[in-house]
Length: 406
Image: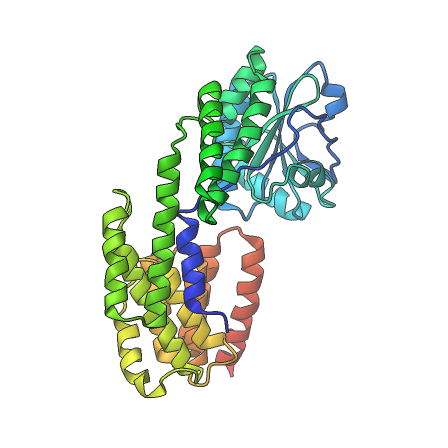
């Protein structure tokens, strides 16, 4: 069984890590739009638009919260840049996209297309090495891709420059190359590269940062700060490993002292320590219930788990779901699973279908069928118009209702 704590740590470090930007061949000819069906607006033809119209191609999905959040922004941009063509491309079923677009109405007031075979996605997302959505691409009057990024992060400014003819593609390419070198520096700082090499990389990056007015928009490159951040992340990893391994209090105290001395002002060290302690508690509990830990400690661990109040409800759900579904668990405490899931439900104010679904499962497995039906119905309400989630919840609800009927 993969450690519960492993999942917690991945989520934690995702929030403080450094991420590489997508790298593509800016300035290359834009791939054609190979569309299965146009759901809204007139079909767009990049070959016909060349020399006449700038086009923004944006990749999104109905199930993607950040995509839904960016839709009104794209609509506003379409109104502002009336001569620019905006096209939203999804690879979902046409029926799902049509229903969503109809519900959005004027809030989604630009062309929408379905790329069922993902041929358009291959020409943009895959070609530029991008895995996440939403992602927008600007195709200029020359039919070239001159910019790509999150539609709510720099698209408007870039589009303004492209429309006014002030967009400097040479500088954009130079910044893209500098970004690759910056990422290489991040990696080198974290893997113990020798000081001479780091100094050489630092000098080159400082020069590029000055030439470009910032490799990263709005930020000044500071090698010392980058290295300080990586050192701090290393201490965080050392601390969690020491706690998980049950190291001596002296070793843990030594690392804690270093953390206290180097923690950034905006980093909540107390919350981090609490998360680590709770993660270890959860991990010890799971080890006990699968028979690989101290089973004699199970009553006390159960009591502590029940009293745990982590800020992140996902930690509660991970343990609750493992109790219910992990094949290695020998002792399934349905009462505890329901309690943990209910705490997550309360923390999310019954607005997230996930905690409600896990809570319903705990109730059902614990023999409280009618209550499970009620909870799963609430999960359906919370799912809104997410068709994929609704299908799973509806199938589960039928199962619970059938049992209740008997």
